[in-house]
Image 1 (tube, rainbow, N blue to C red):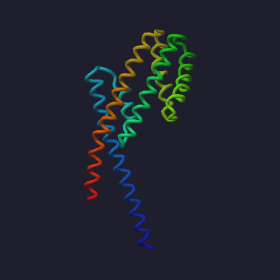
Image 2 (cartoon, helix red, strand yellow):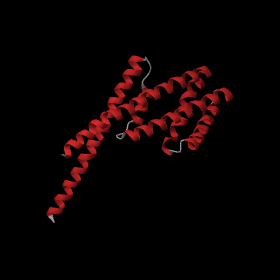
Image 3 (cartoon, rainbow, N blue to C red):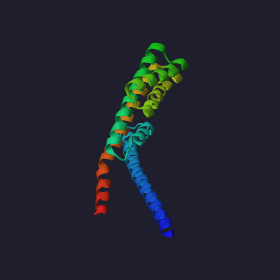
Image 4 (cartoon, rainbow, N blue to C red):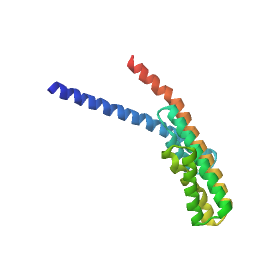
Length: 181
């Protein structure tokens, strides 16, 4: 009986160590992606790195295939949100009702095209982010600027996250393979 209890305890400890190691790998990738995006957007392009860093966090994955799928989903939903917001700004102007309408239409379009329920939130959030500068200043031109800047920040952040996942995926895999030998 004591032997089984000891085996269960050692098994639980091993699972905990594996989870912590996975968390450490994920955190490492996230920090590398975040630093690179911060340097590119803030120091290089003199832009606010917030949305790029958020995109890097959203897209960062342990597996490169998962990171690529998150990248594609993020790009599609960002483009959908920006496009819907631009159409609503042009057709309905910048009112509180047009912001809410654009958010609703962005979700519907995303649900029809992307078919990944968890990522449907990105399109309406993007629509709101694009439309609020226009709503606050009553200038559709600011909405266009916000759309272009937001899209660029998301593309940079997401692309860096995929690149870091790809670059570090081999490092972690080789390390695990060498530990098994």
